Image (cartoon, rainbow, N blue to C red):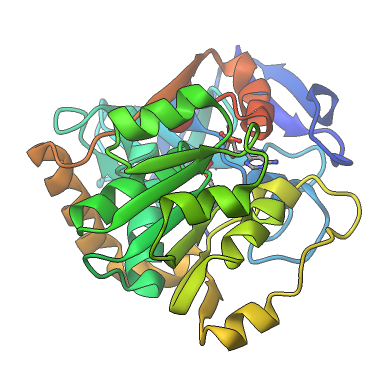
Length: 332
Ligand code: NAP
């Protein structure tokens, strides 16, 4: 049987399991000339999918109700009538939450499991690794000796940003939600300091303590009060990279944040949002850099691997509870 996960209704606030519907169909999929049959191996769950579950204008159209949800997927080619793929190839691309599906191959990239574990093409060698590399370099323009603060630091994007910043010679401070994550940042990823935002009594003061020379770059994954606190510590000509705002993705009312303008004016600071696909022309070079660092052992990664197709929605929901360390991935 082929299993599919559909968007049943749009979440109000935090997503719940009732927003999803599981269906099954007989596994008699056939392929036409030019098509391939794919079997799903790994599914990426990502915070941005929350945005696509709402019926709101964004940089990608919303998911349609009663249609399969899509995300980054690694799949195995189990039969092919497309000259670009042979049986046994693995591909990466934006695919449906289905155990098997037919594709015409458009937008799919072949991935090589002998060079790196297949799951890494959804994380450090995939979309989140590229986001870290390109957001930091294109907007942050990091320079050795500067200080960077990263929120969501123990997640897929944040953990890679911090390591790249270390490679480039910066002082790196991470903000995350548990002491265990702070320990991981310092021991595995080489961060210089970490702040647990759940136990800190004053995040602004704690940043000042670990960043005595102020903050030159802020890589923002979370938004909300954590990001407000960072603003009090920015230096002249600081760069604030707005990658995401997970702390407000489930808000049902407009968030109450401080006014950023005085901080930006006073410090001649730059604040810029971005979507990784803005830099699609730079993907090959960035990928090469990330792979080289990985091979050289300068870059490492952590994954939280959840087992089983039926657990995809729960793995997604768990992102909002901080249950992942590094990239959250479901193995089918
Ligand atoms: P991730 O960091 O691996 O997972 C999400 C993490 O967010 C959780 O582990 C949790 O860690 C933290 N979190 C959840 N609720 C929070 C809250 N209320 N306040 C503070 N932290 C909270 O996810 P990711 O894939 O690397 O994505 C990180 C951010 O980058 C997201 O905002 C995402 O939308 C964005 N993103 C943007 C682009 C782009 O092109 N702009 C691309 C990829 C990702 P804690 O335990 O530390 O709370």
